[in-house]
Image (tube, rainbow, N blue to C red; front, side):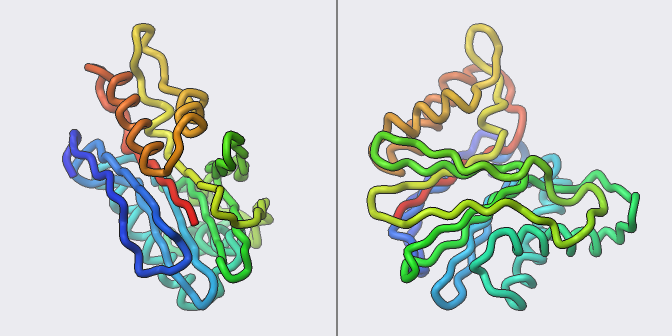
Length: 239
């Protein structure tokens, strides 16, 4: 994808857990660091939406490493606990970069993990500098992730990530997004787009598809002739 390309698509998943999801990604360069990853294991599905360090080649490098590690985690562990996935991802990143106590690196990522089972009627969320938003009718609930990112330095494991659990129902839809959207400069005063403006769009829309399309049109209008600052990803799904 080039700087001005846009991919908004309703994807027909082979994973039976989700009725539908809509995802849009715009990369600042031809390669980038925003990605999503999804895997199903028996009754549970794990969805990861992540924003890696930088954009371009460095971002793509982190995307490749992170998705490879996630594939490894899925082959060895169950996918019902998002906190375990985050902890394993951080630990294996440290091993990949050979980080010892006190060491640091410029590579890392912000990451939200949803684990859900339609049979159990449960969705669990844990985040590393990433939040999940659940829309229920006219109400909007924020499920807050932890403040720290993954990678960057050596940490003591296991990391006790906070887990938020909610019941699944047909009235709810869920949204994750990277800060490439909220940090975009625009408007008459050259201010950031901001989280409040994005959340108002979610609250005022009816369907996931309408929400994603509305946000991207509003963001494009707000950005106008201002330069794009970062990769961006917006992800919505419902059951």
